[in-house]
Amino acid sequence: MNTRHAQLVLAVAREGSFTAAAKSLFIAQPTLSQQIRQIEQQLGAPIFERGTTPVSLTPAGQIYVQAARRFLQIETQMNESIAALSGHTAGLLRLGLPQQRADELLPQVLAEFQSVYPEVCVQAVSLPNDELERKLLGSELDMALVSGEAENEKLEYQLIASDEVVLLAGRKTRLAQRIPSGSTISLNACEGEKFILPTESLPFTRSYDELLARAGLSPFVVLRTDDSQCAKRVCAACSLVMLCPFITLLSDTPAMQQLSHYRLSDSLYTSLYMARPKDMPLTPYAQTLYTMMSNRFRAMTAYRL
Image 1 (cartoon, helix red, strand yellow):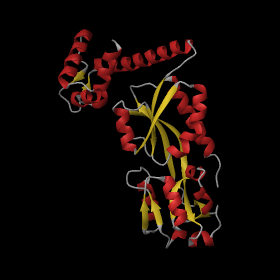
Image 2 (cartoon, one colour):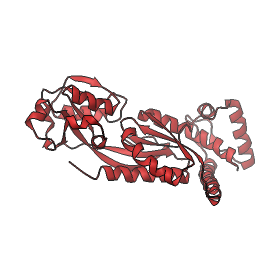
Image 3 (tube, one colour):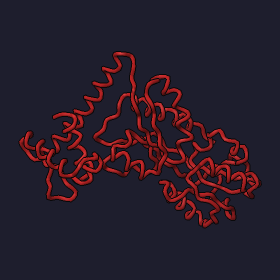
Image 4 (tube, helix red, strand yellow):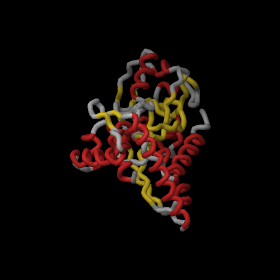
């Protein structure tokens, strides 16, 4: 086994087809098929059952895949340890962040991370959950923070924290004029108010819609947006109300001075996970960034209204 052989086999196992694996590896499908057959010949046993859809692993293939994952992990750790001997660890960390979370998390941890790994460049993108997971499976990202449910069997998820959903209201809304900021309210108290809601691309949109339905509310939605900072500014300027994760309150924006905030008696929580492909171990510096982000998120959300 060598690095390339491990990567080829794991790509087919991950994608479930030679065509999809070849596309993710940027090679021709016949070339990939030929290389896999050569690996199987060297192994003396077939790795894949080609008559199934998706392609499945033979018993020998299951053993090979487990060994390939360990092989890549050991190789990664070896390279990092050797690099650490010189006192310098340089590299690129490709990080995916969920929409509505990048502004709250990244500025808080990047300075700390750079103090530990000054020669590692973090390349961050903010995308919807499904796009983040697609890029992880296509080896376009090393790790990603995803909101919602841990549903993709090809990814490994580590729970960072659960974040309480709260309600923001412009100070000129009837709600804010009747009920002091910081109170716990029933969502029914928003009867007659106009809302800002997230777009369908965000994983917690359905949960928000269900929460409103349980309260018997069908509000007029003035704006749907993926941008939490924009939503807060519009909420304040236009006397609207909006649901959002608690961490959104902690962003240092002038809009927060124009908003009242409330806990909900009908509690709802959103989950935040770190996700990575099962066959791609994290580098030490990626693990460090994950730990820093996890600790920061928990510290930021430890305070409650």
